[in-house]
Image (cartoon, rainbow, N blue to C red; front, side, top):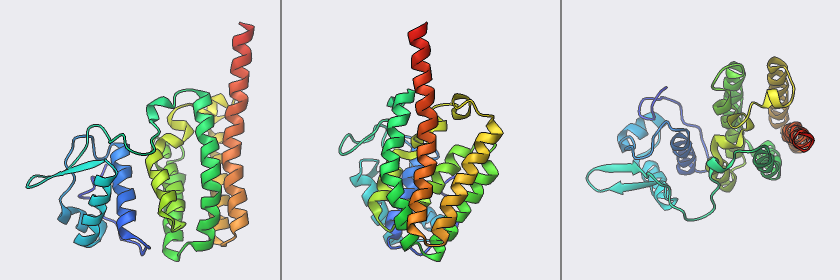
Length: 250
């Protein structure tokens, strides 16, 4: 896996390059690409890897410090904190362990991401649409592999970025890959579905979201996102009810 200091990617035009960099670095921290207690790459390395100015890098690091994710030790560098600051809103991924927990997270995502998809359809730039397409293509290629969860999350994160509203991005980045049910559960097994059929349905749902955003059809984008997330919720809700009935009968 490429590290933040070696991964090369072209920068996209965006309302806030600093906020986009914050989102990318935060996700790398949450996913373990940059580990707790580890030193961040140097400013120069981040500038080269992300294609941004030193001013953007410093502003992004300042925001990460304010969020309690990193601390700068003068003369040494910036380090990821072992224990994130308890300040502000927080959902601990370690607490998302049961079907009921996962369903609750999906309900939160429905309220957040349906509107995110609609705004993305209205506001996305050609560059942002390209980024969503690239994330979707990675998901399609990884759909039957082990990296499907990370690429699935990146697709949803790119949609949040395309809203132009940093708070959508902040919440998505905070939640991280823990919002994807497959990180906690074997969703295909729970839904009594063949894995290939299950992934094919997920791919189709993601394609419909992308196509609506590409057409800049806000209502269709909202409907496609709602269908995608409610389908996931209903599959898990039915499994939860079935599990409870089995416990009562036992």
